[in-house]
Length: 166
Image (cartoon, rainbow, N blue to C red; front, side):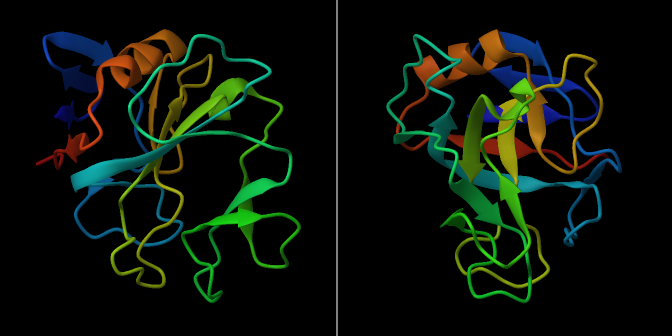
């Protein structure tokens, strides 16, 4: 299991990595747009990656090369809320194909997906940290090599446990 201990530590097996969390910390009461990383234990569902930028990616998790038309709906009023979508879509969404490297690898987490509850959080991912390690909107972010190392050793039933800050 991957374990996140706020404010900046992620452990997996015997490895310790620095991570970045939401700009508003960690919460056990996640709401859309609150800037918090949700506390809890979540399955790693699927890996998305930029085939044009990332080489040597290995994982037993399902892997999907990102296309320019790939997105994730973050509109709590839409029926596709918190799901992978094909663009264009009129609802608010995250574009998975980005100019910056933050979504070069994106791991979708099983947060608010069984069942999906409107306003309880969407697009909670593990992804590549920004070069300046600025906080995320609620995701867990790591350096590219750390993320590749973890994914190479993850089993198909891997979970992440995000501890509360208290």
